[in-house]
Image (cartoon, rainbow, N blue to C red; front, side, top):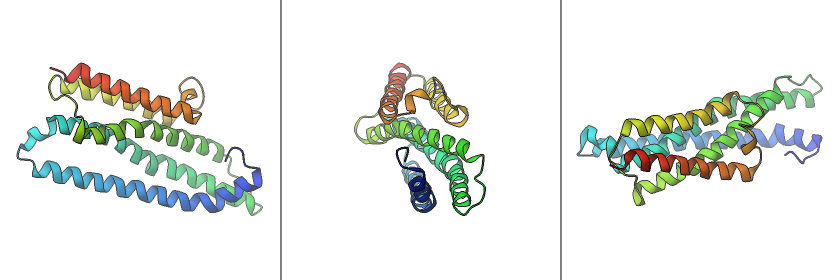
Length: 199
């Protein structure tokens, strides 16, 4: 979109973006709800009771679920509403009205939340897959592990919600940086697991 001329960008924002966002939002909601159902079924059927939450499988899948949950909330609470502002502004301007002055700020916030979701997708996919094939250790200090992972994920999320430009957004301005950042986050979380969960 950044390389498109203003007329093409306006047309895409008015006509293509709303449809794409509806599918994007619907997919996020469906994925989140089916994920909850699968986790509920798995934990509900476990003969371990409450202890099922601290098994290597659970720690691994819930690490992925943490990132997936943040991605879901980014879609429904940040990206979707902010893009609605951008779309409404483009439609108003195209029909001869006044563009919304808040649209550029909303577009930037949606951009950062989207890029953060790509960053989150790498550890999310790894830990979801690893739950069946490459589980994390199950011993050690679970509280320290979860606290440290929540801090890492929380700092990234806060950055997507309040930062505008600068050193904290520079790594995710371009796609290669987003991918590298995602793998760095995965490596940090994996290192935290090895540090805190290996007893």
